[in-house]
Length: 41
Figure (spheres, rainbow, N blue to C red):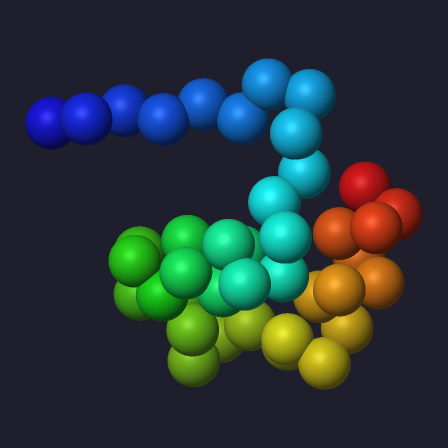
């Protein structure tokens, strides 16, 4: 199994959506605020 790490890199909104979808979290996420949250993380 491949593993991935983010090192000093915040994902884009599209990457974040893809990551959430890949682990089955899409129905539980509030993507309306995700872009702002990512920019402030």
